Image 1: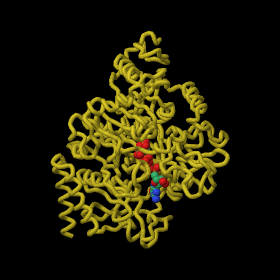
Image 2: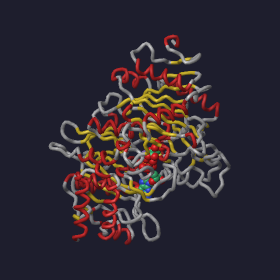
Image 3: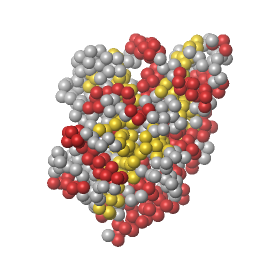
Image 4: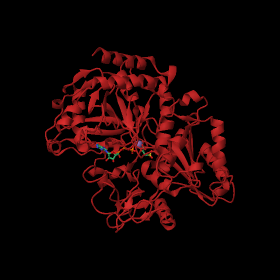
Length: 600
Ligand code: GTP
Ligand code: SPV
Ligand code: MN
C-alpha cells in the first residue's frame, strides 16, 4: 500500500485512504508527514479493535492508568503535564489576512508569519512517533448542518478522546470523499513546553495548527478550534450560527417538548443544565428533560422560519469537580464505565475522585502524589470524556439530521451582584444586546486568574473566529421577514448574598425558571416590564418545594435601577472598543435603554 505514496522516509502506512479519490486529503497528509517526519502514519477507522490497540499501548507507556475494573470498567485516568491543564487564551490566535477581520477580541498574527512560526515548530517534531490521521464529522453523519474535518496528531490520547467526542473514522471519510471539503487540523504535543505552545487558526484556509499542548480545547481540534472558531467564520458566510451553547428539551406533562439553547461561559453550568433532573414535584407531574448537547450548538433558520439546532459533538468533555449524585445524577450515571478521566484524584482502591463527589477520602492527587489535605485532589479543570449515548437523558432527537427547533435562547454568567435570577429581552435586537453585554467571573477552564469579572459576549470571547462587531451584525441579520425567532432570556444562577453564599439553589431547581420561560413563549406566564427587560415577580415562578431566604426573595427578582445605569453606561464603552464596525442598531438599543433608565 505504502508504495502508492510518496513517502517522506521509510514510512509504514496503515489503513491508508489510497485507492479512493481523496487526492487533496492524501496530498495534505503527505505534505504534513514530510514536514513532521513521523516513523509511521496510521489512518484511524474508529473501530473497536483500533481503540483496543491504542489503549494497550497507552497502558504500557503510562499515558492511561486503568481504574478499578469492578466499579469503573473500561475506564482510565490520564494525568496531563502539570503545566498543561487548561485552554491557553493568550497563546490562541486567529490569523486572517486583515487584522481587523479577527477584531480586538482575538490575538492576531499575519497568516504567512503564523505559518512560518508554526512550521518551524512542527519541523521534524514527529520523529520516532506515529502520526494519526483522524477523519471526523461534527454533527449527525447524514445532517446537512454537519461539517467534516481531519485532525493529524501524534497523541494517541487525542485519538481516544476524538473517538468519543466526534463521529470518527470510516463514515466521516466517506462523507469527506463526497463533499471534497474538510477542515484541516495539524496537532503535535511537541515537548509540552509552555514556551513553545501556540493554537493558530486560519479561518480563510479552513486550517488549524496547534503545537505544544495535549489538553482539551487546545488539542481535540474538532471541539473549540473547529466547531467554534473556524465554524463561526463559516457560519457567517453561509448564514448560520456556531455557538458555545448547550441544547436541552423540556417535556411537559402533556408530552409537548420545547428546546432551549443556552450560552454560559466555560465552567458556568452548561453541562449541568443540559442534564437537569426535574425537582421531585415536577417529576411526579410528568416533566422530563432531554439532553441534546452540553457545549456547542450549530443552528440555522429552517423553511418554517424557526431556528433548528444540532449538537456537533458526540460526547461530553465535562468538568469533574462538583459533579455528584446530588448535583448531576445523569452525568454521574454516564461516567460509571467506558470513560476517560483527566487530572482527577484516586481513592485507595483505584476509583476516580474529585472535590464535591462524596465524603470519601482520596489517596492520590491529580499529579500522582499522596493526597495532601492542603491542596485539592482533583485539578479544578479536571474532566471526564464520555460518549453522549451513555447519558440517561440523551435525547432521541439528538441524532436528527434536521436538528431540533429552538423556542428560547438563554444567556448567563457568574454574577455575584446586580443581575437578577432571570429576565426576558423585549425583542431580538434587545436580545442580541443582552448577549453582547454578557459578563462573567473567570473560571479554571482557562489559565489565568479565577474570579475576575470580564465581558464575555454570548460566552464566545475565547471562541469567536472573527471580529465581534461583525458577529453582532451577523446575529442581528437573522431578524428578517418570515423569521420565527426564539425568545431571548438572561439568567444568573450565581447571585450571592451578604454572607457570600449563592442565593439560588440552582441545578434541578433551575427547571422552575425554564418553566417560566416556556410560559412566556406560550404567552401564559406573567412578568413586569422594566428598562432592562421583563422580570418575573417571585410569585410568577412556581416555588413550592423550595425554601428561599428573605434576602433571596428580595434580591433575585429585584431590578436595581442605579446599578443598571452604571452597567449600561459601561456597556457603551465596551461596544466603543470595537469602533465603527459595531452595528448602529446595537448602539441605538444601548442608547434607548440608557435613556429609559435615566427617565425612571
Ligand atoms: P465547560 O465544559 O467548561 O464549557 O463548562 P460548563 O458550562 O458545562 O459548566 P458545568 O456545567 O460543568 O459547571 C461548572 C461548575 O458550575 C460545576 O462546579 C458545577 O457544580 C457548577 N454549577 C453548575 N450549575 C450550577 C447551578 O445551577 N448553581 C450553582 N451554584 N453552581 C452550578
Ligand atoms: C471550555 O473551556 O469551554 C470547555 C473545555 O468546554 S475545553 O475543551 O478545554 O475548551
Ligand atoms: Mn465549553
